[in-house]
Structure formats: C-alpha cells, structure tokens
Image 1 (cartoon, rainbow, N blue to C red):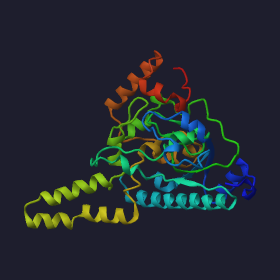
Image 2: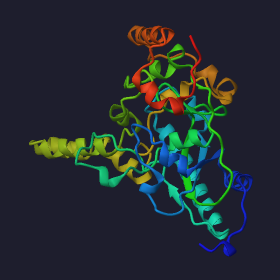
Image 3: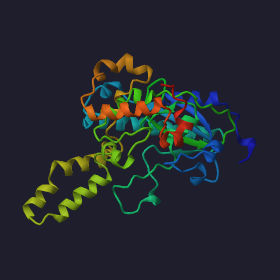
Length: 329
C-alpha cells in the first residue's frame, strides 16, 4: 500500500467509529503478539489467514439483550432468535468498520464469530472445530477482559454476556494492554460449572466437543443424526413421520435463520456474577441455580482445596497468560 493514500488514524479514532457503528466493546491487539502466543486448544495465528493486513486485530463485542438472559431455560428458542439478531448486528458493524478503514486506505479482513476452519473437518460431525482465530484469546490481548473457569471471556462491563468478532488490518495505531488480574473467582464461585446442563465445565477447562451439542443444538451434528435416523428407519410410515417431525421443522427453521445453529445454550454466561450488568439487571432472576447438584458442589470443593494448596491444574498453567493472576485462597 502507498502511504500517500492513507489517512492517519489513532486507536481512539477507530474505537469511536466502531462504537458509532453499534458495538459495545472494542479493543485493539498487536498481531505480532498473537503470532507469538497461540492458545493450546486454538493454535491458529493471523498469518494462517493472510500474509497481509494483520498487524492489528480490532476485537469487537455486542452485548446480549438482558430480557432473554433472564429466561432460565437454556433451550428457549426466543433466546436463540434474539441472539441471532445480536449476531446480525455485530456482523453489520464489523463490515461497516472494514469499509470505513478501506476508505482511509487500510484494507481489513473480518474474523467471523461463528465460522470454523472448513479444511479441518474430517467427516466427524461430533469433532470440535476451532474458529479461524480464537476471539476470546484475542480479546484478552486487546485488553477487554480475562478468561474464566470455563475458558469463556469475562469483561468488567458485561461479564461473559456478549458476542465477539474481529477485524484485522495493518493501521499503525496504539494497542491495548491485557489485564493482569483474573476477573474470575474460579471454583470458589463455580456458578458456570453448577449451572451447565451438559456438565462440560472442568477445572479451568471445558469439554468443547460435548459443549457443542448445547451451544449449537440444531447444528451440523444434530442434522446428521436426524438424517441417519431417517435413512435407517425401515418402516415407511415411521420414516415419513421422522421427515415431518418437529425435529425436521426445527432444523429447517434453524438453518434458515441461523438460530440454534450459530446460537444456543449460554447458561454459563447468563448466571456469571462478573460484570456491572449482573447486579443491575440480572441477579434477581438468575440468583438460584436449579441445575446444581451435590456432586457438582463436591467437585468444586475439591478444586478449591487444590488451589488452596497451590496445586493448580495443567489447564490453568497452559492458559494462565489469558486467565490472569487468581487471588490466593
């Protein structure tokens, strides 16, 4: 690119424009730092996407609507639809930012919040596929927050209740510094583990493949399961019933809109007490956790005992850069 055709931009300019386009969170990470520090479960780097325009990674976030967050059922379709609309707004904001940056002389590339690496698919619908770049880890490097017990990004403003996307470009602007202190209280709180309907949260880790069945309840794995059931049914009448079933309708409607495919369970996000929005808008509806069990509480107590003895799990060590320093028990 020819610098004569570029307008000088500051980080403040970019953030103000992003907020003008409707985002609630915006931070800027150094692409070189992301190149040098790849997360253990998400080893993708900016250079895996492009050889150009990756010097800065602008991470954008849009909060969830609190009204649907207050609904306790994880499989409530109103939540799916509202979240899909949030996603649409976030995608439009990122595209608007890309074109604005281009008008200033800086080509940009959107990192979609819901698209996985298609070349990594190996004919196994249940395999967990990572996104093109870990937006949670990029957001930490962009100073937006820290990872929680379930490796979900937490922010001071909204806890984990938002969607993320990112725009890569090479504008020479200031970058943000990561937070050093963990926002998450770990197993001492443990509400994400207690509420999880799939029981996929561990000690600073998560069973991502098992979580996918809940995060995307009408996604590709469910579609292939349903089609296999139809193909395997030998009774013509029952086969027709399966074709006309509610499951077929839900899958069709979800594929049509994305609701239930790119959106789904977010109970761990809903009940997290981190974030200024929780006490103000959510706590009265979400304080109690009906999914909690004595077994879950026993596991959390064992985790607290281990941390009190400073016996941190390997998963914490591997992600400590992005989790931050946890308070001593």
